[in-house]
Image 1 (tube, rainbow, N blue to C red):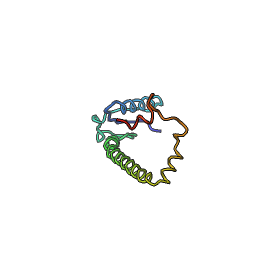
Image 2 (image 1 turned 90 degrees about the horizontal axis):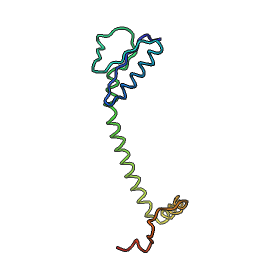
Image 3 (image 1 turned 90 degrees about the vertical axis):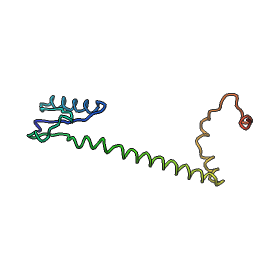
Image 4 (image 1 turned 135 degrees about the vertical axis):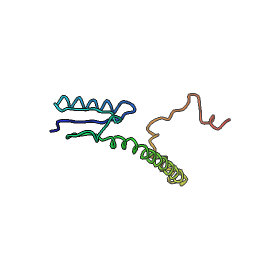
Length: 126
């Protein structure tokens, strides 16, 4: 069992601080000495003893490494939507595939919204 826990946190919104404080309170309730230290006050070279710590590198790397992956995922999503739409658009040009999509659509089971008073003959007029 650990006797002391030191948690370093970096926060921009306060969420990491709340989590580190909660972990510190939980450790204290179980009889473990706990320190919650902001990352800018960390002095790992000056500390000694056996600690369990969330290192500054891990916290910082988590934030820095997140956004490139998010940008790549978003670009992949946009590319997937474009390619799927292009494929669907080309498939609908075949008469038998168009009929297949028409007969298997779920719009037969629910009504589409139409503006009250609008009829099919009104849609073609300017």
